[in-house]
Length: 216
Image (cartoon, rainbow, N blue to C red; front, side, top):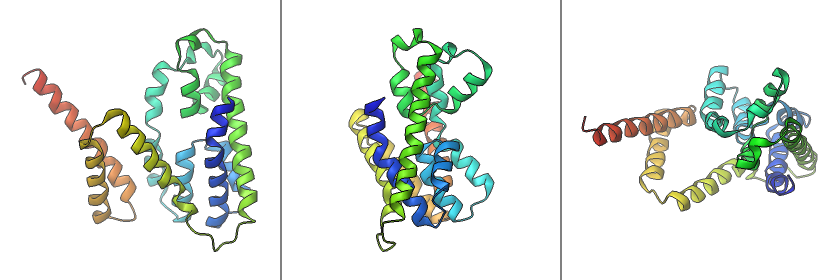
């Protein structure tokens, strides 16, 4: 767990600082960390709450951002976690880092205690990091700007790393095009529109390529 915790330490601190500098009370930071427990969505949620976004927009944004967890569940060893309550918590606490630690052939034989211990320890560590960040946020002058850019910087880095793996130029170009069109349609709902367009374009491309392979 130590490498995973070290990796998310800067993000947790940045989230806590961002909560305070957005205008929320410091205690909202650990609450978000404990109840939401979805790092990327927590950054987005702060902006949505500050802008008084409709609940429907928050719900759809959460679905689109965290939809990848559906695919995580395919290989996550949930069958080793017995008991309805334990399964519910394990499903809730399935994060990118936890999946990376448990999506191995060896994890298929791990005990419930081992899997839940990994998830619970990471959950506690995240809440602690966010709370520390909130405490530091009260010490950082309000004149310091750019903290809200943390989540954008995170996605930029993830995008660059994904490009290094796939080396597919059309996909990032398509995503950029969707973002531009969505911003022109509605800046307030830019994220929701852009992600919806991007998902629709990917599904349409997959359907067309499948038909071509089968000569339809």
